[in-house]
Length: 329
Image (cartoon, rainbow, N blue to C red; front, top):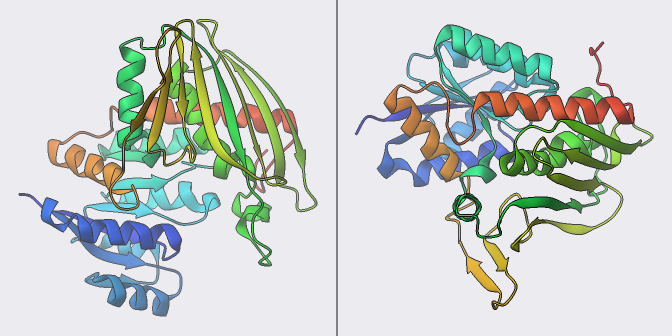
């Protein structure tokens, strides 16, 4: 089996979880080859803890490592585009943590570069690859609820009191929409495709980031999505998809669901359990490995054009609520 050698850019929570999953996937040929951080000592400590062969103090050094096939970008949102471009231009395949970029302009540049360099590129929208979401796709395709008409749902959470929380840092691309709302919009476009009209309302907090958002997406076939995300209340995130012949409930947490309920008139509720192994990140990693081994430059499950559409939708939501990040015009 041809090994697929990963390099991790970043040493935070997400990089740690991915490192654990790579170790679990060693029998499938996954290798943690290197890690990089702006702080070299942190990279070396991470490499020792997780068994990486090399540690670097810059993205360029990681990108030049000939023993790395795929770089996983786990840095703050604001750096995704620059770090992705550096790795693609160095000949690496790239898996970039969600949100893919800060805006659609950045995303389009990343996609163009990947296609020019003929390198694999994918947004790490891990939810798409979970067993529950695979089952959801199967049931929608089989018209288990008839024609989907309405998708409703969202989630609310209040971050901890730690000073300097990245969600409240405008310079790092903070706010509720890019961090949590991206899951909801991704699922809406997974069900209905790209929206034709968007209506959004939101409120910015003292730090300048969005803390309280709602939006309605209208789709060409008549479907609607009514969604919300908030940093000022608490509710476990879930969604319901309503069709003309039934309803599918994707139970919380919607970013890592393990339970669906299918409800139809005249039938008892069908409660379905779809457990995910480990943290759940291994499914997207397996997709990356399969695509790289097959010579594919993008995933059919999370295609680049759909990632770009999701970024455009979030751009329009941000335009309507007045959220702009440093450096945007």
